[in-house]
Amino acid sequence: MSNVGGSDYYLERKEKYWRQLARLQKSASRVLQVHLAPDAVAQVGQEFYSEFAIVLSELPYIGGDDNMLTFTLVSSAAALAYIRVLERHGLPVVTTGETLNAVYADVFGSLPGIVKWWLQRSEFSTSHQKKLRAFAEKSQRREYSGDWVMVFVEGDGEKFDYGCDYTECAVLKFFRHMGADEYMPWVCVMDFTMSTALRTGLYRTKTLYFGGNCCDFRYKANALGLPSLPITELPEYRTRS
Image (cartoon, rainbow, N blue to C red):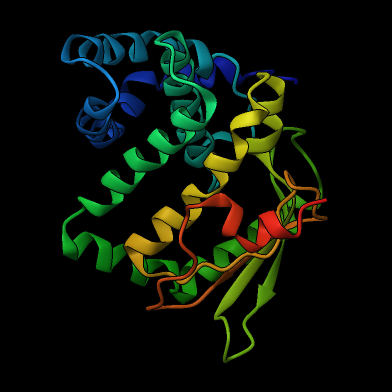
C-alpha cells in the first residue's frame, strides 16, 4: 500500500492524536481489568504508545486535513495498536475483538449527555450531509488508493434519513495490508456501538468484508439501530458470501 507523504503526516501529529485518544486509553484501562492482572493492564498502556507510532507509520496518506475521514482512519490505527498489544498478552482473536468492542462502548457510553446530543445533532445536520455528498463525489476520482470510495444515498423520508454505500473501505484495505483482516468483523460492528450511544439508528445489511458489493450504511435520527453483538445475529453476517 502506497504511503507517500503518509508516515510524515501522521507521525508529525502523533502527540495531537495521543491527546485526542485520552478517553480511549481510560476506557481501555477499565475494561481490560476483566481479562488482565492490574500490572498487565498498566503494561498494555505503556506498550500501546509505542505500537501506535508503529501503526501510524504504516497508514496510507488519503488527503490529510482535506479528508473528512482522516481521523477515522487514525482511530482504526489506534484499534490495531491495541489489537497487536493484546495479541502479545495472549488474548485470542474473539476475546480481543469483543474486548475492543467493550472498550469503544465505554468510550461512547461515558460521553457527557450534552456531547452525545451535539454529536447526534451534527450527524444529521444539513452541513454534514452536504460534506458527505461532496466527499462521495470526490471519492469517485480515486485520488488515493488507500481511501474510501462511496455514494451518498438520499433518505426515503420514512425508514432512514440518509445513507452511504461504501464500495471501497480504507479501514479494510489497511487491515488487510497489515495482515489483521481477521479482526474486521469486530472493527466493523463498532459502528453500531457508536450509533447506539449517539442514537443515530444505524442499519446495515451487508459489508465488503463479508463479501457484499458495498457497506450499505443507513441512518435514522433518534433511533438505536442494530446492536453490535453477537455478530452472528447481524444481517451483514447472515448475508455473507
